[in-house]
Amino acid sequence: MKVLLPVIITISGSMSFLRWVSEKLSVESLRDLELFGEQTQASPLRKAHEDSRESLNPLPHRDTMGSFLPDSSAYELRNVIGRGLESLMTVNLAVYKPTGEYVAIRRIDLDSCANDMVSYLQGELRVSKLFHHPCILPYKSVFIAENELWVITPFMAYGSARDLIITHFTDGLNEQTIAYILLGVLRALEYIHQMGYVHRSVKASHILISADGQMFLSGLRSIFSLIRHGQRARVVHDFPQYSVKVLPWLSPEVLQQNLQGYDFRSDIYSLGITACELANGHVPFKDMPATQMLLEKLNGTVPCLLDTTTIPPEELSMKPSRSGADSGICEGPGAGGARHTNGEPSSSSGGNPYSRTFSSHFHAFVELCLQRDPEKRPSASSLIGHSFFKQIKRRPSEALPELLRPVSPISSLDSMQHQDSPTGLASLESDLSQLDVDDWDF
Image 1 (cartoon, rainbow, N blue to C red):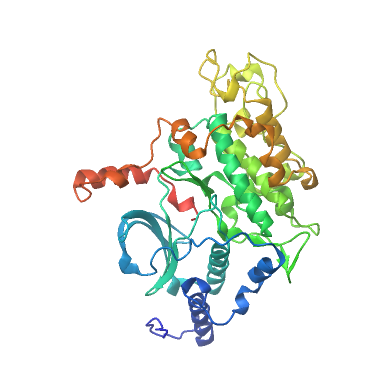
Image 2 (cartoon, rainbow, N blue to C red):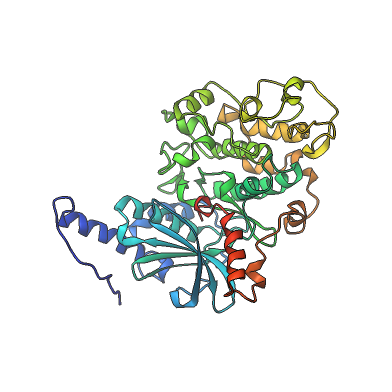
């Protein structure tokens, strides 16, 4: 038996009764999703995603959704660690009482959600139900508690790759660390593309790392299906909703919005931008006005890895600034210096963080991803076999915690024996404040 949310109906000139009914029906349709219990009949709202299942060979089902209880009383809310979705969402650190695990809970105020936002959330939650892959952030449970939609995900104790850059590796991560991270992203993208979807939001803040060094791709809100009526469309023309934050990562063909459309290879371009972001410590095109950024991309301006092969020697001898070479847009190879492996700075760098040399394999990888012509970009499956990844010798869970030193996960979550003490809470809040949770896009 369904229990409708208590509401007080106030009809005014700005909010008609029909609009009120429409929005409440949209919110109620969230309750009817398969995520909130077994349904006896298929909903027409799920048709596009059912088409995806019919037209593609499904992988073995692994139950991640529903593995945690869909009951708010099973969770002990702790710190508020983020907000988002135009202030509709609050993100809490919480404890799952049956196991003592720490989780992140995204609580969304449904009473304040308009129709387009509810539809936006519906798409994300249906996809999360469909996807099961070890490199994609799992949703442990999704349910409605009073007037809020609760989305339960594991807590990522290392935060996002962007958090690591902002707080510890301001000039970029070393090459081997990036190789482990990008390989995980490619495996997730390979799965997403095989399922008939385009991610459309690949960036460092959507790459999350757990306490045991496992990497997860998030950001499923912008995902879009290529499957129509049981068949894969060659291209799509839809522009990502709420996409202002991801413009620097989007490919030229997505931004251009012409009749040629785009396909899964737009994600490969975004991966190339993300590789530059991880290596250089900042995002190419980030500070440009949108119009200028579009023109630069359409004209074939290609970002690159900043090192001794791409920055002229005279610039390397200057004190770094957030201009010139720091734009991440290359003017061409420069001569200079002895080569150093894995992007480690030269001992004679004179303090310039870009007096380092990344491997030719890494440069070649980025160049492939950032081809202006999408037809020339390899698929995710092809890139997984690229020579750049030959340096990977161990499992990420073994290598990443070591490579990320001196950074350590927020271990106080597991060892807080005095969690109610002022000192313990202050330490935890200090650690959590370094995470830019608002942009994780769980």
